[in-house]
Length: 462
Image (cartoon, rainbow, N blue to C red; front, side):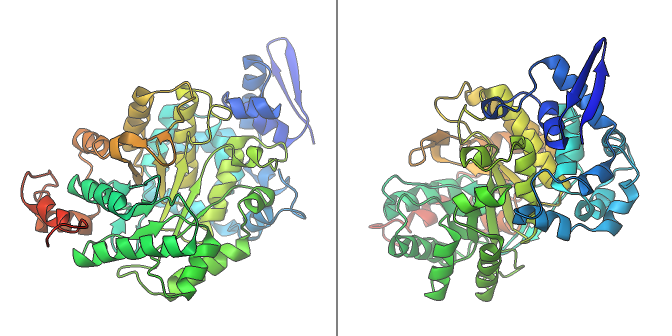
């Protein structure tokens, strides 16, 4: 079915819903690379006019990726909650945008609606929004999850402590972890991207982090970001796996390029829960997403990258994760060319994830060959802080020496906390006070807590 719009004296025709969605997207290099972007600002605006008049129900009638050949599409349609959708079922995309921006869209109303929305609906309405709309609406969505602490509460923001090392050196990882903890990072997770994928090495890193958490009774969780199959194997061997990690995408083909299926993710969820390591909850999955992955895998089906990102969120939603984050600028300028595109994508991803009911965080990052710098990351950090992001990254010096990209530092989270009054997970905050690292208000102290943590370093006396 084609779609039409008239803008001034010109008439624009869009071949199908995929074409309409792609042409309505804000400019980004990935869609240009795929050959699906609007050819002009006039065409993009015409597409938005046509999209605004489209009934939301249309997304339940026309698939962007075929149902018969794509298990992500089947997941989206087969789990759609018609009762939850009912309050907005009569609206067009434009009317839905107006409703979301109204006072009727309270946090409670948005929570009830989440299961009734498909990712395509979330992506469509985001294309009609300014950045301030994406921020305001996402700020109303509070998604709370639990494992050893409570994440996502109002007025709080967590940090993934990311102590990567180019050689997976235990002493280097431990030193960076202690540095991050002493600056109040780590309540989301202490998460290591391993440089190597040998199960023995990954098991050693898991035990290293588990021993540190147990030694100081830290109310947090650890994760070595290995493939889900490796995590399942390590669980079967008795390794101390807290969270099961996996990168996911928005089509079956893109997930196949990651070596995963929906059934495998379910197996990972069940394996993680079987250990019963959570003390407060059983949200055991950690997912990462990012615009452009389906295009890089040759599995985008002509769908724009932002819509495919929202479809990846639907995959995450099915497994009740503790954490989900978009690694927004990690792939590079081929997909998000500059700081402006990265900022917009970060706000879109966070908005769509929150609208679909996910505990969304963001790796506010860029590669060294992108037209972006740390000022752009400061801007996105500030905007996501006001939007209620669940967590961000804490990387030593903001420079990941293993993955070779730029992110946010241990110190950056101190800025956004002071600016917006954001606190840490309550259990972690209480631990920082007990250790003498922070006071009752969460402010860091120059006390003795850091010295106790230093005792965990190899070669240091306890």
